[in-house]
Length: 92
Image (cartoon, rainbow, N blue to C red; front, side):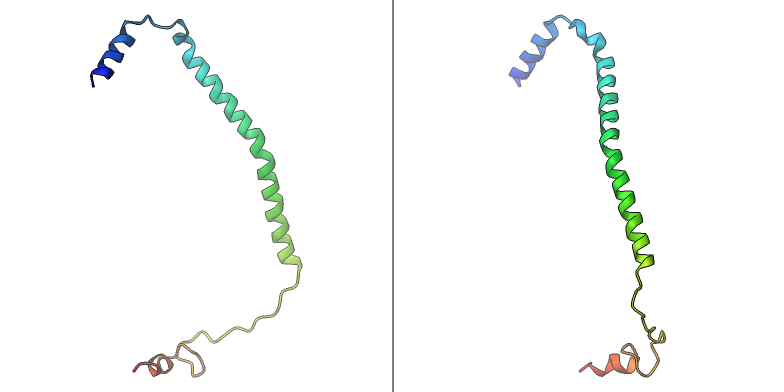
């Protein structure tokens, strides 16, 4: 702990850097540059994802799908696997 106190005391005795006044402006300019750079690189990826999603959606509508038979919705119908009699048959 003495080393930390000694280092902080030495830091306090140093003069304030002259570039400290321009630090905030520099940070904000750097943040703005990073945002614009990421926007430039993200735009093509987003466009590609949108075109791909649109292509998959249109392809799913255009291509014919197989016909499906609807199953009975009632669990109490005689032929279903969820009828109470079939659920209780396997106990024991």
